[in-house]
Image (cartoon, rainbow, N blue to C red; front, side):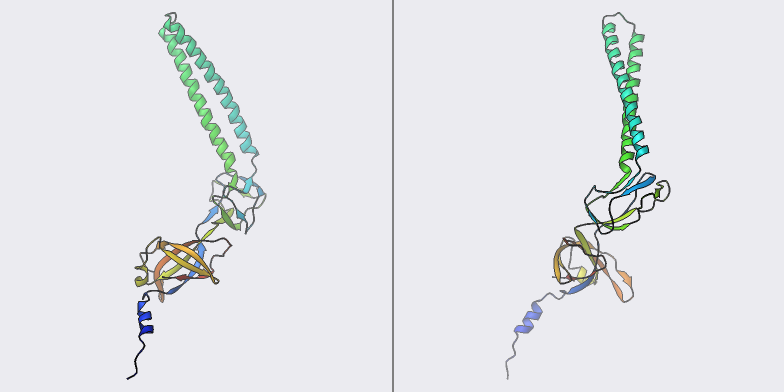
Length: 251
């Protein structure tokens, strides 16, 4: 009888039964719609679709003349109250010294103390009002919340932004430098994985090292395409597009 070579069979049996190439789709790791929290008229647009912007970089600016005027007014009020507080403090110190020498009545000391407390409160209130107006001025410039890619731009110079209403998104941005590969797994496949596990993502014959970000607990999808959601986060240097097909390499 002819001998059977068992090596190929042993090799097949040694491979994990659940190893597979899983089709996936690329999506942004984070996508946000941006608008200004204050109302005004768009004066300048600083970025266009496809631009890569750094965190804090301006995207659009409203006409800031009114906000700048409010800041200047608040600063003037603060200076006035600061002088009043210092004057009340000096007066209180003088009255306290006279009171210690028993040359002034308690009522006069109390008047000086009340004046100092009131002046201090007004100064603190002016400080808070200045911070609020400075924030409004800062909010008149829409900035990138993180290193991002500009996906959509709806802002145009002269456009009116009404923050009291449902504000229209002026920009849509996605986090730059990373993407997510989304797929669906069977119950047997997903039970072998855990969040943080390393997985390889293949896109256009290019391999990326990723880590599992999400493992779904409930199946999703329609009849014939039901599975447990899997998300793999991976860093990218080049620009990839959402919706691009990918492959996840299960170990």
